[in-house]
Amino acid sequence: MGCRILVVDDEPLVCESIRMLLAYDGHRVETACSGEEALKRFGREEFDLVFTDFCMPGMKGDELAAQIKHRAPEKPVILLTAFPPSHHVAAIDLVITKPFYLSTLREAIETVMNKVRAK
Image (cartoon, rainbow, N blue to C red):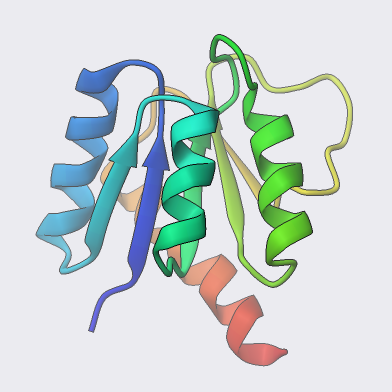
């Protein structure tokens, strides 16, 4: 059975593309177009992990990750970005640089979920 995943990106086409790729693998995927919308969804629904863009208007991906970790420290957050932060962000479990392949997303999910299971 797949994971329940929240994908956050301010570009709707990116959200939908990632949603379709992950749904193809059997994951149940919801999307949000902002950090604020993501936090509302995260408060109402249960997710196994979050993929978030870094550069978004308003709340950036690292800020969203910090808010998620504050609410649920065990939830993995994977940063998807064309411009990785120049500093280490403790709330981020993994960074994937855009552009990426489906295999990269698969490996990332396996990596973070194995860490969750090991705890």
